[in-house]
Length: 173
Image (cartoon, rainbow, N blue to C red):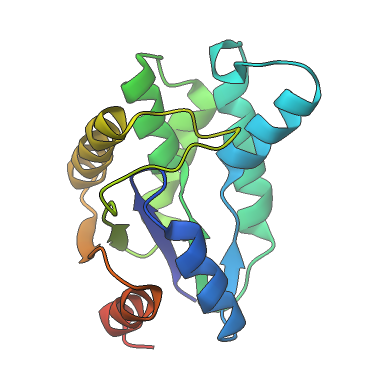
């Protein structure tokens, strides 16, 4: 069954779209990086992205969550997004990440739903990125997915119902 990726710039509304898809009865998988960051913050580590093992923690959680799916499923990000994060932060990809990215082309649908920015970024404990930096990160995401042969379908900025409808149309649920 298809595994669709929702990706895009931080704060673009991916999670809101995911929540609505879930309420509409679709299987969803949460973003791993946000949860890894939240746990590390709770453990007293203010900038976990600077610590060794950060990327592998994200990949391991993504892998565990991906195993528990069945049927059409929507993922809030993927290992390809983690590769884009490495590129954005100037970190080398780990061997675990390289393995997951190689597997991504066989596990996830080749059509990726690219959620466009809303023109701002709302800071959170895990999201400490300026709007300008988020746009740079958005470009890295696009480039990374395209390099790996995925087809990006734009989910334009706008009200949530219109964005969810764009997702549904794109994959023809």
